[in-house]
Image (cartoon, rainbow, N blue to C red; front, side, top):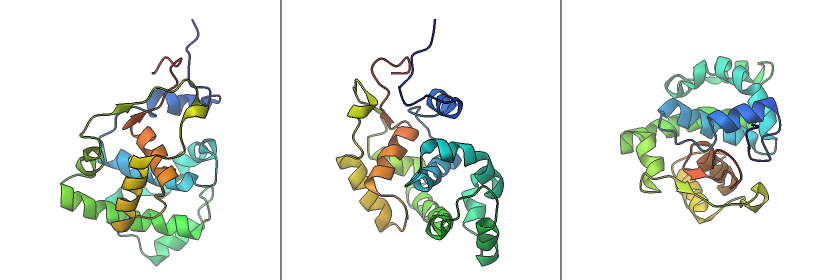
Length: 183
C-alpha cells in the first residue's frame, strides 16, 4: 500500500524532510537553531534548494553549533562567503552569526530556547485541519507575534512567513493535509 503524503512532498529530498522532520515536535536546541537558520536561508528560494545545500551548511557551520557560530569573526565570515554550495547572500550569512548570538541570549533568559519558543503555545503542538496545502496560510497572528518578538531580540530573517514555516518545521504546527498519513 502506497503511503499518502502532502502533495508538496514530491521529490526524494522533500519526502525525507516531510517524513522525518516536518511537523514533528522538536525540542533539541541545535535543531531549533538549525531549522531557524534554514528557514531564513529559504527566503526567496525553494525549500528543495535548501535541503540540497543542508549538508554543505552542516559542514561549513560546525554542525550548526550555535556556540561556535556566535564566535565567528570577519575571517570566518569571508571564508563562508567563499565556500562552494553556500548561498552568497551577505545579509543571510551575517544573520547566521548574529542569530547565534541572539539565540544564546534567549537561552540565558529562558534557560533554553525550547522554553521560549514553545511557551507561545503553552508547550502543546497545534494541529490544523487543512484539506490541501493550498489552504495553509503564509502567516498568521501567532507567527506575526513571534516574528516581532524575535526581531526585538535581535534576530534577522524572521519575518512572519519565515516564522510560520519555522513553526511547521519544528512541529509547533502540524499542517499535514488531512489525507496525509502523517496527519
